Length: 124
Image (cartoon, rainbow, N blue to C red; front, side, top):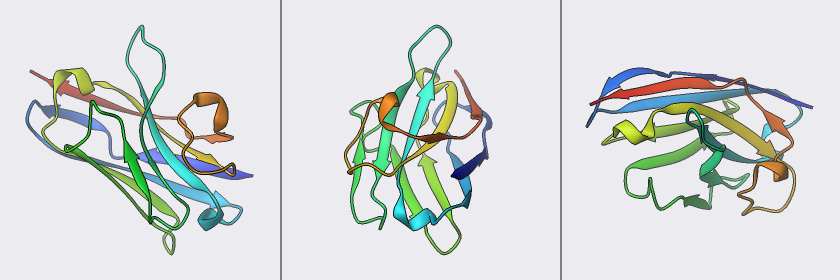
């Protein structure tokens, strides 16, 4: 079992920056590949970024590539999502998720553990 708790969401103006964090507890964090998902009102939950268990591999959705950066600190059992040049369309609840399956998963069903989410609102 892995417990995940997100923090750092809030209200930011378009063009601004925000960093959300996800703290893990429970089983060995460094064994899990991690991802950030988001869900806007009326829309399906979508994956925006993934990071491998070691942190050596990362991937991004086209919509956030070049603006968002995912990272992790295994010693602190924390994964981060640095969001720059934020747009109104980035407004959503952001969730972190963990999987023990092979790296490179983008579907919601591939992730075993989820946080409760943190709201990010970008005002235009």
